[in-house]
Length: 165
Image (cartoon, rainbow, N blue to C red):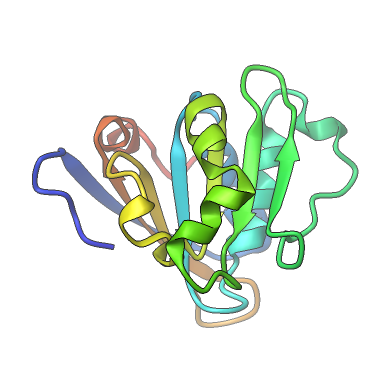
């Protein structure tokens, strides 16, 4: 993802040693997320994007009551009507052109929800400039991950306050 020259940015990297640490970071992000936020989850297959999204959704108010948070690989989008703000979880891996995202209701999600987007590069210029980019990559062993986060716009300030908690 390219930094937007007109928006403030802030970058942090987290070394996560386990799935529990990935979920804890997701919960910390979920606690800072507000309506109309876009969180772009990047990384190769198996990098932990869906695990991060699952931890995020379960940490939102009402999310602990959700029994299953599946990967939207085949449905392309899952909508979670949670307290405070709905969360739309997109997996855009199978999109062939950005305009196909309109058919998934992405415009509605941007306006009326929090959007978690796996494979955000598939959106091209449709990806909002004000967002939180999270690049996940496998760590040295097991469930270890590296999360490089770049906040654009208001996420730059919110990311500054995010610590390894």
